[in-house]
Image (cartoon, rainbow, N blue to C red; front, side):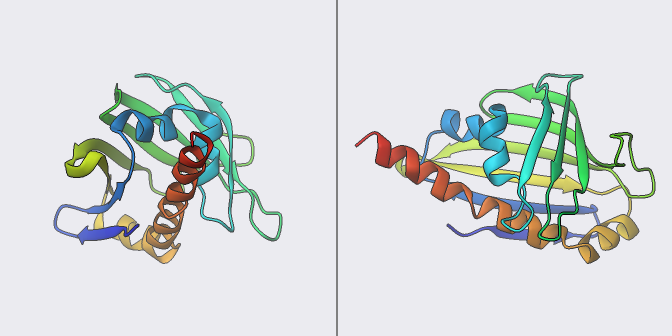
Length: 167
């Protein structure tokens, strides 16, 4: 699987796009099921643990990642829009150890679209909108693009396991 990344400073967006050999409904489950989300949301060296998962408008998803040195950066989503299996919009923020928002780091808006394409495949796009170009640069310096690319790179293996189990 190839992950395409487009950055547009004029609109303050970074968009990641990937195609999967699965239906939109199956790809949606990767977001809707917290145990599946844990398997890919963090990059391989920072696996995620979902602590709360309320995927509905007004809901909140809370998670932490565990790094190779045992550090546990925390994050959360404030869910704005949910239209299974095609659209999810949430504000993605960093959290302090106690789970409160870390206002020293910028919050982004993520717009996920999941759509069928030819051959029974599905295209998933994640557009991240940053509050400013400076915020975009700050999060880029923290490795956001690489982390998301690595995270998405784990999805094919999850989908392949399921295909192998149904044979």
